Image (cartoon, rainbow, N blue to C red; front, side, top):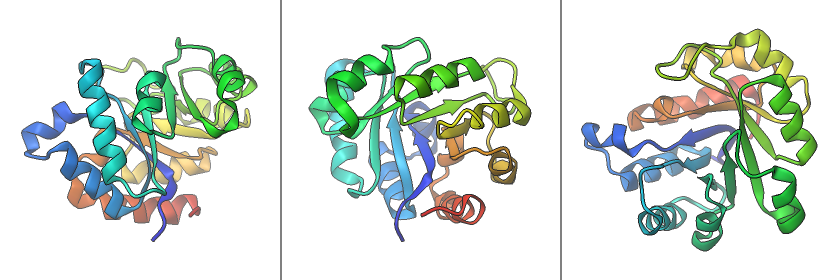
Length: 205
């Protein structure tokens, strides 16, 4: 089964450790389930450990799975990742696109329709948008109406924040390209069901 590009799993090792799940276990489970993209987002790690984790991910994940590093293009390039996911206030996408061309995957976090439009104009490959639904510590939810406005801009939009399997259909109906999440992907036993649901709802391989 080829990976579904409708899913972007964001790492959160601090939440996995109490469950007795190592990062290696998690990465292997993502690869087996056919999750299409993985973003390494571990802001507390120093450079050496972040590089080591990204190299581990590159070694474990099958080649079709896209590997991204949050906010650290240097680590992404050094570790052989496919690209970088930039925070909303990060380096302009256009500057990286001019320097590295289309081969480098570049995503952007966005929280408003205006930010989505700017990311599209600068050449981002995709954006995450949210929080769409209520989620702890992420501010007010923007709702599916704003998600639909963001998706209409034209850049591939991944719905982020408070995502559950039951909300996949809402996200798809609003025009989202797919789903990005941390908690949704942390139960490794449920990953095959998450991938199946994404294929059924978003209809892409």
